[in-house]
Amino acid sequence: MSARLTIEYDGTNFAGWAAQPGQRTVQAELERALQTVLRRPVTLTVAGRTDAGVHAWAQVASHEGDAAPLGSINALLPADVAVTASEPAPDGFDARRDCTSRAYCYRVLTRVARPALEHGRALHWGYPVDRSALHACAASLAGTHDFTAFTPADTYHVRFERDIYAAYWFERGHGLLEFWIEADTFMRHMNRTLVGTMLDVARGRRSPESFAALLDGAPRSAAGPTAPAHGLYFAGAGYAGARLLGTTHLLAAPPSSLQAS
Image (cartoon, rainbow, N blue to C red):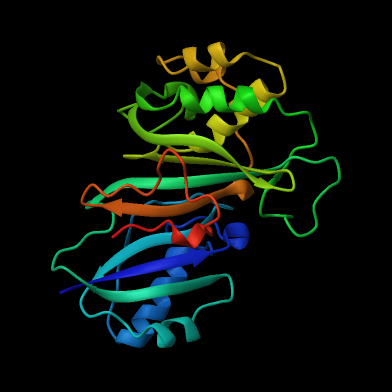
């Protein structure tokens, strides 16, 4: 018997998802609560490991054994992490191994005045933004590409090709831009470096054509800066080939609707 969790968290005060000695992590907080409720050791597997400062709307994790009562788990968790679903899963379900796609969103607030409500939730970008250039960059991402330029040069990755199922910029309103992307898997810092490089294009520091050329295995030094972690959200995980994002997006829908079973 297996269980599946859907989780949301504010990554501001976490050292990422993965348990680390002496660090406050999402995994450690959840496993501690689950072990108390279920009265046995619990080890979680996660769809997408997030770095320090990265948030999640619909992270998916799994563990062996019965599902724990939702209310009991949340009663033991701190305010910046919550389980929104705890349910039985098919025997042997593994949130990471069985995941066929992951979706992320990066939020950019494009206005001169610094934010108060979006502080720690979106990147504040006070420079001019060429929106057509952003759309051109995103359009070049669909398909299979070599993303060597978008992950640290000192890396544990051995495969640098990724399959991008959807990628686009969406304007939420009031100067808030969102970059949505779904792929089979992602490399460390990949989405944040994509955003940092696209913002270079939007500011006129490079062209959309030069951005597209980076997708042929250019070195990390050829791409732009890595955008800060606080603008990035794990939006959801797809299973059995389900896709979370489409070419038109769920325009008026809240992020929590982007879940696939």
